[in-house]
Image (cartoon, rainbow, N blue to C red; front, side, top):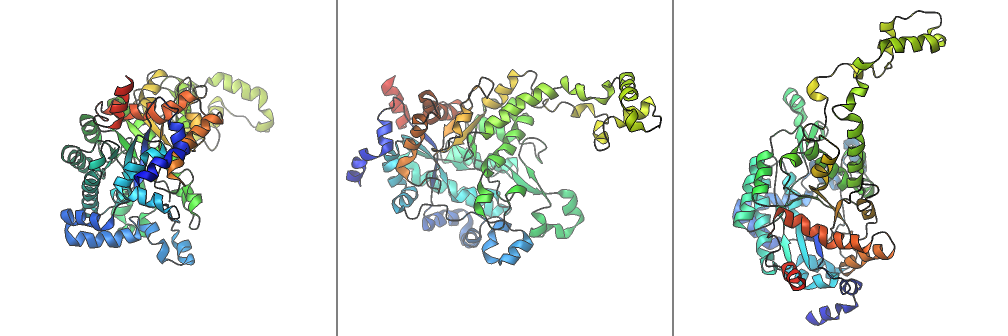
Length: 500
């Protein structure tokens, strides 16, 4: 194997890497667990019973709808509106790559073929249990996964670090798992769900049948841990800040209203990560989480480079029009009744058709028959949508949004250009960072990832300066702003010391 790796000078990514004066950090490398060993860890924490339940649930999946898709006929899928789940997501024909993401030692040896110095590793299995409503299954599988990955990647900690999977059905379980992952296992980064589907209490309490899976899928709401949450998640955010843990999400939006095709995976897939991350980001922003915890860093993975820009631009535009002062431009109390009545008298005779309307009647109808109810006086505490976020002036948006959020973009994604377009983003470049998604179907060839990103420079999509920020500067800041010692003892520390 070493002879083969030494011949990797033929790799396009190795050639690109030779031109760089900085390290390369991959923030999204996926790994596949070795089942028999992983089940030993499950048995350690949950016994043989949980192992059996894991086998049954994981074979069918952890979501009630898509889990049943393969057991239903076409007509049943239509009747139940069960959306088409993901399929064939791992490399198969490229067997070397499949083995690479399955075997930690091989992955560590092959990083240089991809032009990568350091990779942050995401477990495949634990992305699903953190969404399970079965608390015993969820807590056991997450704990087993974190212990398994900490152990199998420990010998390669200079090149690879696995993330801890943290459930958040309530803040306390998140705190407990985070403390175990960091203080006992020595893990440094974490993945959390971007939201939790919860039953709508009024429906569930009134109608016992609402707990049926088919009804529960629609009689639910989505808790994104910030605005309008079921719990106060500040204790969890405080613990993450105390432990200096950068937090990331891979939350799926498949199955949401506009992504619920019963037959087409691509229809459900395109844009689903960015949709789910958008809900999470807006919740933390408008809920004031980034104001109360400015030291926290959140990474939104597997989306693209454009959706963060879209939110940032629209936050600017909406704040200008609907901040606590300018929103009164639309307050019905500020209508000039005399002017309105005079204008209707002068220009509305063709609508009156001989009838007479008083000043009060004109004022009542001026807002239209479909929007009149929206023109009622509002409770004062609901007038300023930017209050919890602490936005007093336009510059505060950058502090609460740009500084806190980092956007994972895959190697060949051309939309990264929008994240770095300061002309679009009001003079600001957003924090897009390199997230190859190695180990999933998005990456056809493990050795091509860095070269594909450099192709964007050759094609004029990215500047060389933005490329450096993309593959090194932004990833390095994401982790070290949360934890200055994140790269201590790694090749990143060594390489930076060598050029200092």
